[in-house]
Amino acid sequence: MATDRPPRPTSDRLAHALEGTGARIERLRMGVVAVVVSAALLVAAVLFLGRAVTVDPTRRAADELTVPAWAAVSVADETYGSRWCLGECRVRMRTWESEGTVEDTSAVYWKAVLDAGWTPADPAVCVGGVGEEGCYVRDELYLELWIVPVECGDRYELCVGSEVTAVVASQAALPRLAEDRRTAAEAG
Image (tube, rainbow, N blue to C red; front, side, top):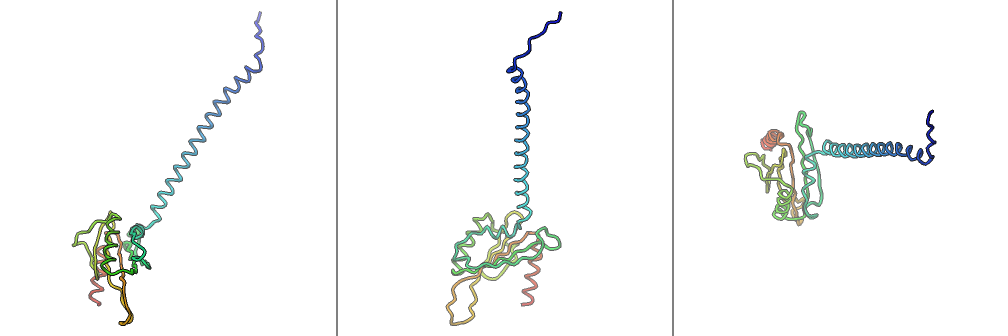
């Protein structure tokens, strides 16, 4: 004779069904967490790499020079060349107008250059310019800085101030910079 089991109480059947459902919910929860973490890491990587690819290193280097407001009253940028050195390497010339004397402005800018991590370059590497000057290297970049008094249009006008020019370039651009300077010196 077959033994008939008494039917399970409804609460036992419900508990058994919920046990299986709980495990599925836990797996689903872990899957969602894994997808969210992966998406967050992917977004962070895209933003980081996107910034590295889109920001010009010569611009970043010039922007890192922090000086007081009187030493950078106005700013003008001029660039040429390719940032990836295709054909010609990128060169950025940034010119600031300063309200200070050449000596005061020189001290402020040279401190800013050193604070930004630049180290003085070997004098043989320096291309040269007019006025108070200095040249520096950092990573693959070269920075040349020179400061001259502002030019006055009227000889009776009181002229105080200086003009700061920074040339930031890849070190691969140095031969071209030296050639440009020689050409300018021969023409002028």
